[in-house]
Amino acid sequence: MTPDPYAPPSLANNNLAELIQQMREQVRRVILGQDIVIEQVLAALLAGGHVLLEGKPGLGKTHLVTTLAKTFGGASARIQFTPDLMPSDVTGFRLFDMKSQTFQLRQGPVFTNLLLADEINRAPAKTQSALLEVMQELQVTIDGETLKLTPPFMTLATQNPVEHEGTYPLPEAQLDRFIMKVLIDYPVREAECEIVTRAAAETPGETDSGVSVICGPQEIVAAQQATAAVLVVPEVVGYAVALAQATRESRSVSLGAGTRGAISLVKIGKAFAALDGRSFVTPDDIKRAALPVLRHRVQLTPEIAISGQDVDDVLQAIVDGVPAPRQ
Image (cartoon, rainbow, N blue to C red; front, side, top):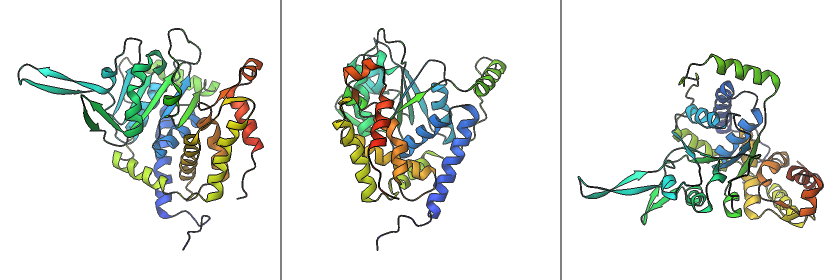
C-alpha cells in the first residue's frame, strides 16, 4: 500500500522535530539574531551535508560550530587556512617513531564531528582538495591506507566576501560538494546590543556558555536516517529538477546547477520538512531551499554581473518563473 503523503506526522517525526527544536533553542541562547542561519545549518546537518558560510569577520561563525557541537556532545575542530597550509596539516600524516621503530599515525583535525575550515579560500587548490575525499566519502587516505571517520561529520567552511587579496577561489568541483551556501549578515540592533553586553562581561578564556547537551552523536545519525526517510512524491522531485534545469536555460546564467544541485534541493527539502515535524516534502520546502542550495552552483553572465544584479536576484526570478505542483 502506498503511504499517504498527507497523513499526520508519525511519532518518530514528532520526536525528531522535538529533538531539533531543543537543539535550535540551545544554539539560539548563544548565537543571537541569526535564526535563519541556525535553521539552515541544522537542515544541512540533518541532510548529512556540508555548509559554506560567507560573512564578514566577527559574526560568530566559530562560535556557531562549537555551540552546535556541544548540543549533541560531539567533537569540533578548527583549521585556519593559510597559503602555506599543507594537505597533511588537514588530513594527518605518519611519523616515524624512533623509540618503537614504527610509523605512528598523527590524525589531522578532520577526525572530528564538526570541522570549521576557516577562510578556506586562503589556501591553494592543493590543500583545498584535501577536503574533497573526506567531504564526499567520510574517509581519509594516508600513505595508501583508508581511514573511516566516525559519523556524524560535517564541514563548515568560511569565506570573507570582502577581502580577496591573497585568496584562491574554490574550484567548481569543491563548491559543488557543499550542500548549501549560507550568508551571515549583521544582527539587528537589539541582538547586537545583547551580544556586546554579554561579551563585555566575559572574562578572558571563559568557555562556559551554558549550553545543554540534548543528545549524543548516535542520535544525530538516527535523525539523519529519519530525515532521509521523509517522503517526497514524484511531482516534488520533478519540481526540484525543473528548478535546476531552469538555471541552465536562463540567459542570465553562464553556468547552471548540475544534477547534484537537484539532489541537494530534495535533501534540504526533506530536512526542512523534518524541522517542521512533517513526514512529507512540499513544493514550499523546495522553494525555501532554492537560494541557499543553488547560489554557489551558478555563475552569472558578465553583462548581468556588471548590471549590478546578484545571484540571489536571478535565482529568485527563476524560482518565480517555474510553476510549482499543486499541494
